Length: 119
Length: 107
Picture 1 (cartoon, one colour):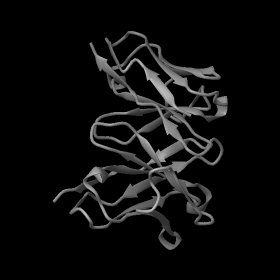
Picture 2 (picture 1 turned 90 degrees about the horizontal axis):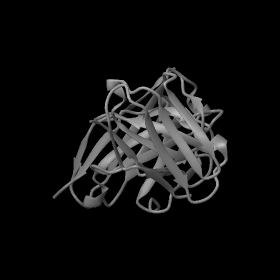
Picture 3 (picture 1 turned 30 degrees about the vertical axis):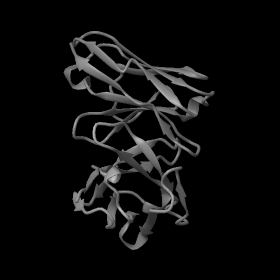
Picture 4 (picture 1 turned 120 degrees about the horizontal axis):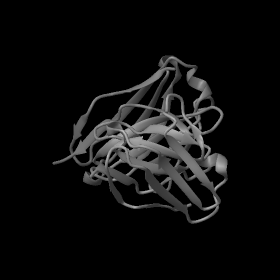
């Protein structure tokens, strides 16, 4: 079983930075990759990339390089998403989603973190 | 791989059968096609993986099928809780892609 618990909503000004955390519980953290998915207001799901929770090696989707950084704090079973130089277009709900060990499908999702970027 | 879902919106009544389509721009191995359900204000939930395997706890009225570039999610008899948005997904390779979604609404 288990769950992914994300940090709460954030309101930021353009140019600022934000970190979204995703704490895993109920399963061995380093055995399942962690994905990040963005959902802009009223829009669909967009894959941002994933991080190998065993090696810490990140993979970024096109459009999510440079300002977006995936990291881990394995001591507390947490995956982090940092976004720098925030733009109003970054306003979205950000989800972490666990990669299933066998199928690779996203079998467990965090509840989502709303990041609002507004002057 | 670009995934195109059809229809964009589907209006049906409880008890009716729903058929949702997902077309891929290139062939997708069956083991890498999934379906997710998302209700307003909630995170997506995995329904189907590997084209036709139901995730844990998913009722058997949900059935996935297809191969190559054509995939289908069928809900045999709609329950009130099934009205939501459904996304297909190509995973297992980078980039992972999602379809744009089909909104299933109550008629």
